Image (cartoon, rainbow, N blue to C red; front, side, top):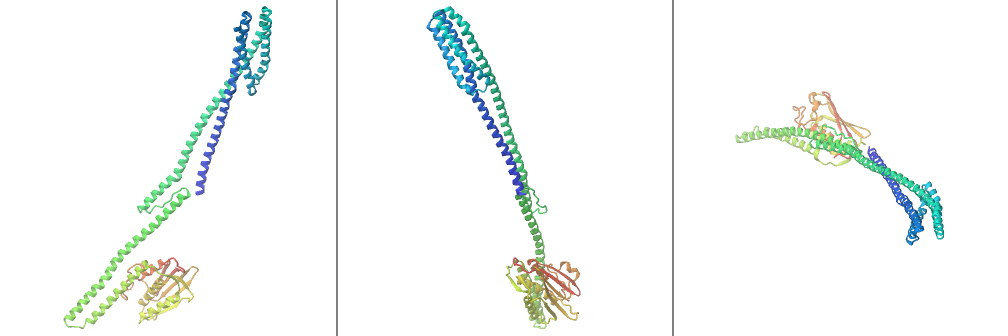
Length: 493
């Protein structure tokens, strides 16, 4: 998706840039052509026209000067004729010079035709001047017969050349105007195209980035307000979709945390209430028994003092067990425990020795069927507390009506996990308790052994911290617990 988004952006920008560069190139070419037309107008067309038009008064002036000289024979008339020829010569020289760049073949042919006529026109005037020295009348006839017609031919050719040049100038001006208009339209197209590209790219960026970012902000605001029921699903570039996934993970994690916190709050409320009750009841009993002992002493009657003292000791022991269970429960979540590799069979045997010394009158047989080579890597304290709670429960809640009682600890090694099985033939867990067996303060057989009701909850805590799972089957024939945990738990403590 990221490459697709970047590819589209590059494609659109590339197309826009290509059209822009092509348009600019086209504009530059057209400007160059307009410049060429302008140069042709000022360097070729106009000088040619001016020179052609400049020769006409020169010819007229030379003819007029010659006629006046024939009649008056004065220097002024001769000077006028010479001035006329000066204009003829200078303009003819200009035309001959720039004729190499003429594009009109007709004008080139006219110039070639006109050059000998000009020389002939000059020679005729010289002949008239010579003839006038001896015979003025003959000179006048020669003027009218040769000089004037030749001058008219030259003027006719000049008129044709000027007309042709004006047509060429008109064509050039029309071409230049057409190209200027085309340039204006091209510039307008480039401007509109650039504006359209900006609008399209802006819309594309807004649709692809701004709108998704707004959705992300709205989702973040919902999450900050703990409105965690709506999943975050934002479409867009890869970066936006990654942000969407991150926000949804955060939402999901916060939802899980919120659920856990609510559950923990509920547990804490229940825990506080039940703990205060379980702590208060023995204390009230101890206080009452202590008052009774004091009364007995005051009356110097000691018959019941020992009985009361034994009861006080029992209640204090219950209090102590409750406090120990509460401390174990706190350590289950808070304590940083050492992760190490250990043999499961050695741990079970250590627990067996400890409990056999603790329950002196114990008739329950503890059977260990664990492979001596089986190793676990995790906090050994957690495994030890799990097994100790299970085995001590099996001892405390054994069925005295059965011929013999046992608790059997076995294990199965799998690829990456271990299943530990604790089986006994005790009283079992009554049906009405099985769906809340791992909740706090659940006492299944209070008439037999008054425990704190935290043992099974503590077991579940330890198993959860080991990333494990537990299930059980229970009836009046006994109970089997199946504990599945990863064989190597480096990340738990």
